[in-house]
Amino acid sequence: RGAMLTACVVFYSLTAGIAGYVSASLYKKMGGTNWANNVLLTVCVFCGPLLLAFSYLNTVAIFYRSTAALPFGTIVIIVVIWALITFPLTVVGGITGKNRATELDAPCRTSKYARKIPQLPWYRGVIPQMTMAGFLPFSAIYIELYYIFASIWGHKVYTIYSIIFIVFVLLLVVTSFVTIALTYFQLAVEDWRWWWRSVLCGGSTGVFIFGYCFYFFNVKSDMTGLLQTSFFFGYMFLVSYAFFLMLGAVGFFSSLLVVKRMYRAIKCE
Image (cartoon, rainbow, N blue to C red; front, side, top):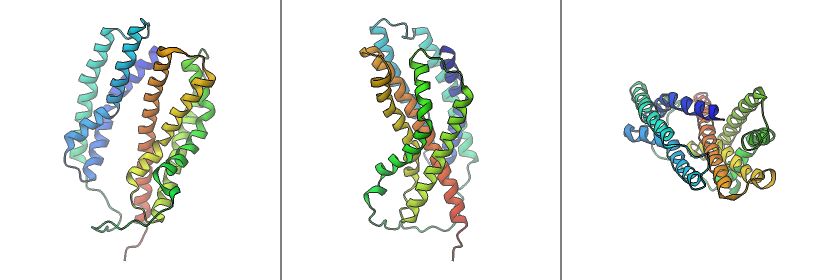
């Protein structure tokens, strides 16, 4: 587990430049001008909640004198990695993305005035759409979630990593297809506000994963007390939030690609 955490920290730090590049490039294509704030938001959108959760959990571990509490030297090393590797790579990636970004390639002409959206039934709202979008991908990974949770929070050993990879790919594919379908249905009823809707629908599986944590904690585990409860829900919240961001990006970029291709195929008169 220590090796896995170390690998996650190193991998996240080294890929920070990709996040900065993609974020700044997309931000400029959308007409944004304050690229510095965009880069800072890219750095803090995950690291901010991570810092708050870690500060609380480490304080609880120190209070209970648990061996799970990280020593001061390890904390300093993590901060140095963030300050000397993660942050600079994000800034460099953001500058590169800003300079290389081109204008948004709109597939057809757009009106300067937003079209009025007709009155829609309740099941086409944000919450029902997120529920439908998150249920199908979650059902594809539900069975494997138990074994993964039992391996991380229990005493079972999980070694079938090929199955995890297949399930992960299946999760990405199902999320992409479901979000594309919901985006198409949304555009079909003349609701053009699909940008953030695709992010929320794609990332809604993270909400289902966090909801599964309550079931596993109360039914499948024997954890009790403030220390175990805080560590379980604290770290699982971060994992669920990470899945929300990742799958939200998958849903958005999938929908963007299909929408551009769909409107490019329409003959504008």
